[in-house]
Amino acid sequence: MGQATNEQLEKRDEEAILLGRIVARDERAIEELHRRYSGPLYSLAVQVTGSDRFAQDIVQEVFVAVWKDAARFDASRGAVGSWLYSMARHKSIDAVRREVLARKRHSDADLELEVAPDDVHQAAWLGVRRDQVRAAMRQLSEVQRGALELAFFAGLTHVEVADQLGVPLGTAKTRIRAGLLRLREILGDAVSDDATGRRDERPPAFLS
Image 1 (cartoon, rainbow, N blue to C red):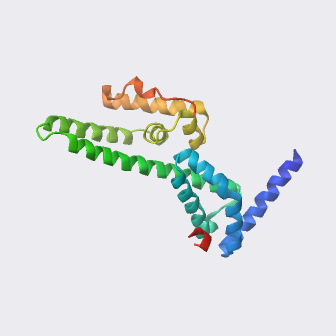
Image 2: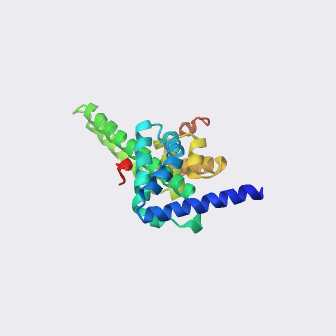
Image 3: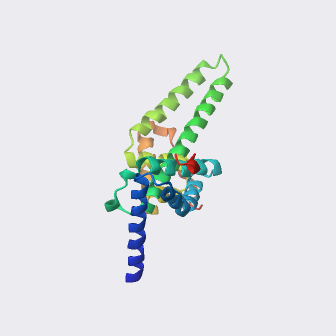
């Protein structure tokens, strides 16, 4: 057990030194870090985004960020690997959110185009409902809003939400359920229990 701990500490120190070399603009150091972590970071990004293209872009963004801001790494707060995984996770979630918002804008535009000119009351009602949902989401706590965005807007399962938030599965479910209940309070009958029926399985040249 002690030997494993020593190996972990040695790896941590070694990679902290790599970060120091990157701060000094040593391209071989960023290449070595890329060799060690590009594969695992890609796998994480694919898991979150479900997209090979997004995952490749995210890995690229992570190492560009490392090259530009390696000095921001604080060894007292954790290992280099944890820092990289955290960056990749946040960039992946941001990518999913951007994609969801882009699709929503397109679907909203399509819906508006499909409404007949004489259906002014229906069009007005749909616009009000969308505004109400957006306003209601802003009234949730940060943890509830974050869990709901991942579970419903990003389409992640409860297990995936728990993994991305770094919390136990039960905590993720509680946040989602509490968020839904709060939305029901705000919106009345607009949010039904059916919404909970989700499944529970499932710089250097080389960076340019």
